[in-house]
Length: 87
Image 1: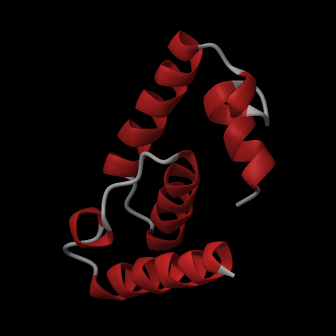
Image 2 (image 1 turned 30 degrees about the horizontal axis):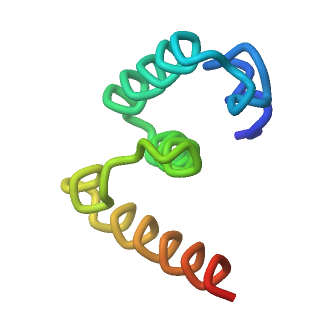
């Protein structure tokens, strides 16, 4: 999945930080809904990564409680992101 395409799909821009609060909230709600109904694992993980980047992702244990491999991948992603941020 292409990040710019996802941002354009949900927010009509690839710069969500430039959006007004109402437009951002609508895009975030659409993203949450799509995440909740997505069945394909790689798409679901990609949507979670976008949500994480926006600061709205559920914790891996909540997001992927029925998908242990995705839960582990999300935890590894967060570990790597934390290490990058720390360094």
